[in-house]
Image (cartoon, rainbow, N blue to C red; front, top):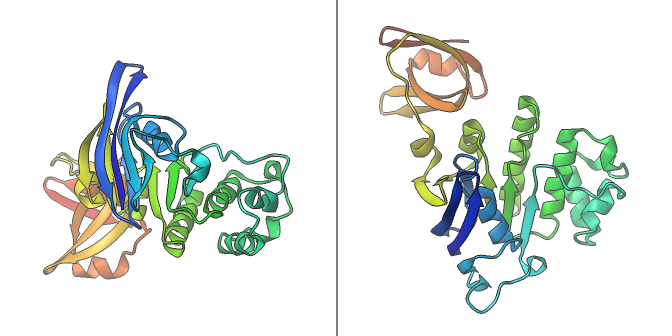
Length: 283
């Protein structure tokens, strides 16, 4: 269990604001932090990592990381941090980047196998693609078997296909190591795939807190439209079938027929259109 009750004055592009967060996070949760830029998401991650100070308290499994008496240094917090810009040591091989955190060679070998990087272990970061670098960064973050994995928009610079691949690997490692994960993301489909809880910040305050479907689902009006989207899920509710579809920066749900539920599948790219009040989906 993570208990967070902190306050910090921030100076942003719109002036000063107070980041005030009071929440509890269950062990093994995957939490997505959402909200517009400048709402305090990254600062909250940095406070949890011990890279910035704040007033208040942070307790993890009963251990005080922050209180009125002390602030535990980052090196003593059981965290892994995955940055957007990879933050790898360019003069070290992939294996050495991992072993710099922890000299456990068996763990390093296991992580490289899980992420299909074994053949690249002796290479240096400047010879890798962006996706490969981010996988190395993710492996390095797991080398100390963190209680808490923090990720700041780790996949935003990657192409859609690579993002989906790494999303699957992030979820695999999250479950494999029984860690608690907090990720900053602006991508609704990414949040829907990975998180079991979404916390939306606005001007330093918690605006919304709930499961991805509750928080992200937005419906359009009855005007005519035709948009391309990706099927995130297909669920049956009583006697009807519903497709959850990512369209741009929105997630919508569309009622589909039983026949459509059989030939459509998660990951399909579809066109969602409507005439009058009857949405139609075509693959």
